[in-house]
Amino acid sequence: MNETINLQLPTDFILGAAMSAWQTEGWAGKKDFQDSYLDSWYKNNKHVWHNGYGPGIATDFYHRYQEDISYMKEIGLTHFRTSINWSRFLIDYENAVVDETYAKHIDNMIDELIANHIEPMICLEHYELPAILLEKYGGWESKHVIHLFIKYAEKVFARYGDRVKHWFTFNEPIVVQTRVYLDAIRWPFEQNTKKWMQWNYNKVLATAKAVKLFKQLKLKENHGAKIGVILNPEVTYARSTARHDQEAARMYDLFFNRIFLDPSIKGEYPAELFELMEAHGVTFDYIKEELQVIKENTIDYVGINLYFPHRVKARSTAWNDHIPFHPAYYYEKHELAGKKMNPYRGWEIYPQIMYDMAIRMKEEYGNIEWFVAENGMGVEGEERFKNEDGIIQDDYRIEFISEHLKWLMKAIVQGVNCTGYMLWAFSDNVSPMNAFKNRYGLVEIDLEANRNRRLKKSAYWFKNLIEERNFEAINDDMVK
Image (cartoon, rainbow, N blue to C red):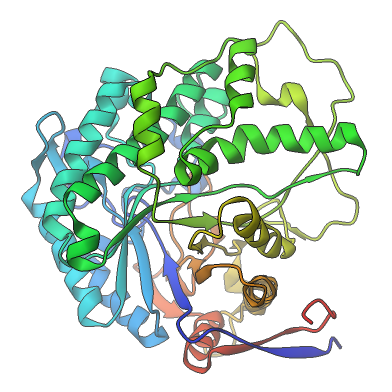
């Protein structure tokens, strides 16, 4: 039996959970023209979604937010992060005309959180790009869509800025275009590396312009509010210490991590990225004035989503010059022998990513304030683990959280400016393609029983963690 060690959390350390609008709300009250990108993907490519489940009902949070918030209160969450569904918030995207019915729902949800002493954290876009803007303008390929996003943000800030103190422009802004335009594995399956680059750039510029607007509205001065972005850098490890493998890891990091971290936090892109884009003919369209906006409007803090490591090695086969440029020109995936896996999600479990990312934030990014915005474990068929009382005994999730927190605490002791940990997710919810296949929640959503809710064992453990501010983890002599 493994020996355990007791670890203490800082007294002001955030302990919360996250979900998004599209993954929970459902389509109740949504007008036909208010589809998001995810809604369109589901409607056009439904067969790839596990068992046909999609965002149509999701967890019915739109109707059941009060019930869910009561569970948040019972667990003791200090913070809850979700998104406003841009596609539903407006009925006219060009002129930013608000859908008052949906906006009132957001009013009520925010007020309910605050009444239960739970701090709302609001993201402006969690893959909820209005589908009509994708069809009409190519989505984030268009500078006009940036303009429309800022008009939308202005309406959101005006309506909720007096109550919400935690704002984020995007959740995982690199994901959609990587799946669609770089790897072409999601609807509408268009491989276009230059378009991928343009989406990346335009989202960085949109964040900077939203920060600029936020400053102009003086929300920080008036209400102590902050604005940032939620990124998902993959902590990247080389196969070996050899120069060619180290270079492969560096290039992966440049194209997938620094492409958002550097401009958002430091205010500028790595010069090498421009050189490589030019060499491969994939440079995004920009002007110097836009780069200046990015430089002058960096984020206040950043949320980091951390789930698994990324392992690469130098290419062992020649690149096929007949196919479009892909950053994999510079690397290949490395399969580490003996790695610990989550077999349901296909992701490696390597808690040290928390420490390594934390030290990087301290040493390379000025020790900016940041927090873990998502971390969690999705498991299929959790009903197998119910006890005689019908409560899921998800000890694997408790171990996962405690082991990741252990490495995070080691970094915090060393002066890392990490202010919190947000679990993905508060409840089971719909994921892209996997739908309800893998369950992530502290709270079970029973699809066979009218989506009824029930706390899992991990919810009671998390409640105790919040109350006691300490936890047990495996003593492997890591924490000194």
